[in-house]
Image (cartoon, rainbow, N blue to C red; front, side, top):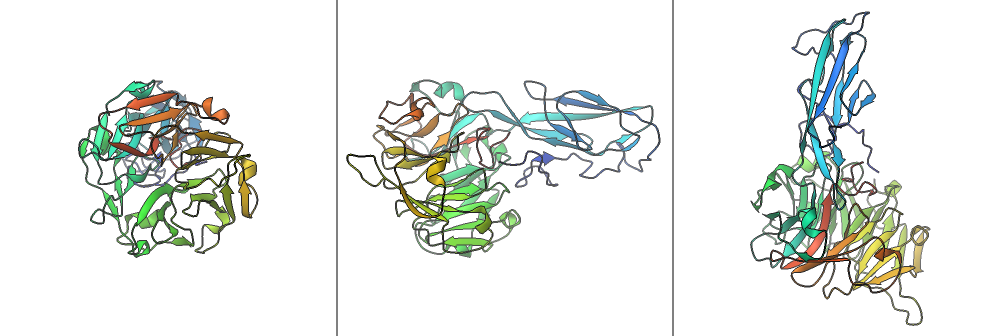
Length: 439
């Protein structure tokens, strides 16, 4: 899982920036008002004050010491280094994430005096919602965000945010809640990033990053699904070119970069997921799910470490076909959206190397009259997916415990929809190995 204490210096909004430094920068040494900060033999008071979250709590480090609430410390006089981290709170379906601002990141503590540092949190606009990509919507919207209260039970719900991102296939979020999408047409950017701050309201959005690359090639379809690994590198399934490519954090701000890594020989790759060991899993057009071990993700190549074909149980044994969306649950099962079947590949199914055929112990008929593509787990362990035209649905954690064809626990009808596609939640559930699964 993502290290909650990973720190990258830079402006808020940079990729993979989790610890936020204030105006004083990342290092110690500066005084609260500038100048030289003398180190003395005495001690002073460093008063940390946290505001902005419903609980009044946060996550701050001072010289490596964790502080989660208003606290007065008594360090030795001299420069101190203060860092603050994203936090997520509340919610049963989805939590709300908060980003901090520090007024003085490198305070100078003077012997016998009190220095106050204020850490102020603000909600990230894309958090606290259930998001789905859409097509054939009643408006120009391609990405819809629903308030949790409106989708907590079967009924009719309108989107709280209806945004046009010029495509939303295989979309995902980064750690700061920025939205990454693939373009809907050849005139759209193949991959684009939209700042989280744009989603306080709906409407047309302009990407802050448009990513083109010779690594995408000219085959159609092009980029299909996006995923960020635990280090914040972006992986893109390039469907027509039968490969999955990686762009490093540094490359994401470059012009027309060539992918750092290309994993080739993956037929029509679709959904991408990472497990807790950093291994990458990909759903393929060969009706398989393949694993590429973390140790092999640093280099290009054509081989997979494990290739899994799933089948239905006896007496009628048939191969499960057309895997698309894939997602891990809290127990390490990899759920796969096959054609009208949700199947859980257990840790035992996922183990080993080479080609193997498994019969997943849990297989659920979706009964939703649609063709589910992307799937996403919520904080309660419920699984969201597309249903019929104008609808999406959720299977509860209890329903996912056994095979069958249950009616979904929740079915939402929405006038905004058209057809739902991929689903994602920011922040991802705390149990999730996804890059945006905040602790």
